[in-house]
Image (tube, rainbow over the protein chains, first blue to last red):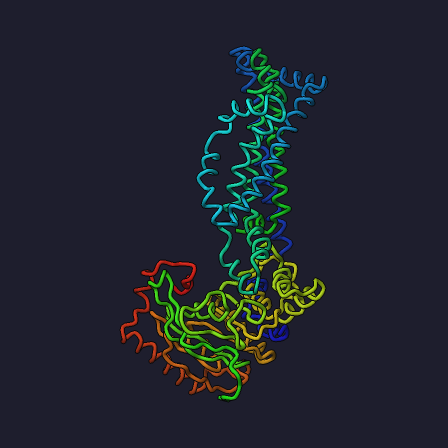
Length: 294
Length: 279
């Protein structure tokens, strides 16, 4: 078979590509060098623009501070000093620890229960149909609406905050998981059935992997909501963590302190998103390269 | 035409409807497939070719009549392997992983699986691509993997649903001759669905010509052309031209008899049971 192929190279488009324009085109090393150079320039331009924008923001803060005073906008240097002080005396680390605990526990609970129920509701069409309106109702209600109830049921402290996060972040994960499984590729399931796959194999080996990209995007939404939910619960329930620091600084109009906390929240949110993107690359490598390829 | 050989597949007065009986897909279909025979199902859109394959595979059941494969009602499994129009590879598995997947359905041990998968990839000339993901391959290469996957389970019957229809003409030509060579070596029965009359004559020993709406048998024709055909291209032979002319005449008759080949196509809402590729 292989010999047969070798005798008929023109019929294989993939092999004819490399030889087709060989005589006229530049040598590949030179072409690759050019492409590398172009990419380097592009990277430089992007990074340069980003630095410029960041500097403009800082300059704008200085200008606003000079024009309107430190209540409207703190001086960036004060924010930096305040940050150093808060990191040095441990308030920031303690608050960060409290917030990460709530986010982490809440997200883990949401992810495990959301994926589990999502698989059940997506895999069993009957269950999915029965529970659809309830899931939608819960998902459409803002998580903050349940905070008074959760306070009555669970109190004001960490466990109650975890429940707030869980309640807010579980439903998007559940809905994405269920939709991913319910809409799994019918061509692939028919293929597996034709080769004799039984229900359970079909489910775990075809439908769930096929739904993985959808599950992962649910997790990314869930993580973002978990961060928001954590800060809201820390602002409105027993003040603690980064949200608590925000409220304390804001109430006393200590805007430099307030900005120092906001910066930490930005960094936290960004790193959570980056972490999940990294996980997506590792778990659904085929999907990521599919997207980049097209 | 040896009547003493037990047929491998046998269809008797098969009828099938979809959409709660509103769409009649197949009507009174009867034919046999002998062991090792290469048979083509040919016909215009809407004649139920794909539905017939699904019935033989046991993916769906008949409404009337009976289908038997090796003397029993068909059950999807390793005796019947299907090659689809699009390769239908699992995108999250590598090429070799895709073949190992169907071998695991047969209950082979891990060692046997990878050994056989690699051997089959060698047979279709893709051994170097064992670790590649499907989307990294061209359409023709993906279809080769689909063929290797079907052959890996060592089926008694290979069911092929327009496997080359989506490929470019040159790749199609190569894959046809590869298929004929595989078949001459392994001699499993092949049921090959196509709407390409030349392809059907070129490949098969017998052609079942179907008429559309509802799908019925128009004629069953024996193809008597010298073997092996991948060595001697039969397209230059007068017998080939004659058969081609005959089959086209039958198709033109269908049109004259009022079979609407195109216009009705949009009138049927697609449904799981209906042939998406045909409509």
